[in-house]
Image 1 (cartoon, rainbow, N blue to C red):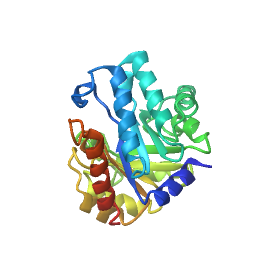
Image 2 (cartoon, rainbow, N blue to C red):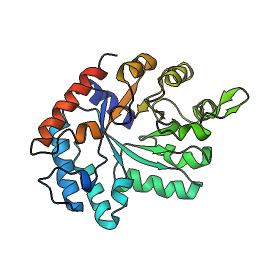
Image 3 (tube, rainbow, N blue to C red):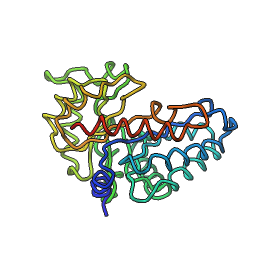
Image 4 (cartoon, rainbow, N blue to C red):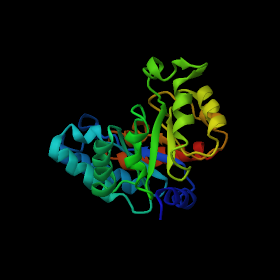
Length: 264
C-alpha cells in the first residue's frame, strides 16, 4: 500500500486530519520522568498509546533526537517503531541536497527508520528531490510557505510578479503526482494558504503552526477550502499537562483538536 493510501485509510478510520508532533524535549518532560534521553522514549510511548485512536499521523522532528547523538537516534527509532503500522508517519527532517546525498538521506528515513513521508527543502531543485520521489510508495512534503517569521526573508520575494513560493509550487508540482507529492504551508499565513489552494486544489498539505505558534483554526479551515490536509499540533497536545495525568490530558487535547479540525 502506498503511503498516500495509508493516509486516506487512517483518516477515514480515525475520522481525523490531526497530526501530533512528537517534538519532545528533556526539559519539558512531566515531573514524574527523570530528565534523561531514555525518558523521552517512555514519554513518547505513553503519548502515542493515549492518542493513537484520535490522530491520522505523527510528525517527528529529527532535530529533537539528533542533538543527543547515538542515544537520541535510538529513541527516534524506538518512537517510530512504537507507532501503530496503520498510522501515517512523517519524518520532519527537511532534507535536500545534491542527488547522491539525498539518496542517502532517503535510504535512512524510508528504509532504516521506516517513515512513510519526509519534509524536504526544494531550494536546490529537482535533482535534490528526485531521490525521495524514487520511492514510489512513499510521500514527500516540500517546503512552500513555512510558519516561522523568517519565511518573509526569501519565500515572499517576488519574481515576475509572483512570490518565490508560487514558483516553487508551480514548478515542483510537475515532478510527481498528488499521491506522491505535497507541500508544507504554515497555519500562520491563512490568506496565502487560500491563494495556494487555488494553485494546487488537490495536493495534500501539511499545515503546522496551530497552537503554540499562533495559527487560527477557523482561518486555516476557511483558507484550506476542504482540500486534503494534515493539520499538526505539537506542544499544545503533548505538554497539555506536566503532572501524572499528562497522557490523559494529551488525549483530551487531541480529541478537542480533532473536533475543531473536522469542521471542514
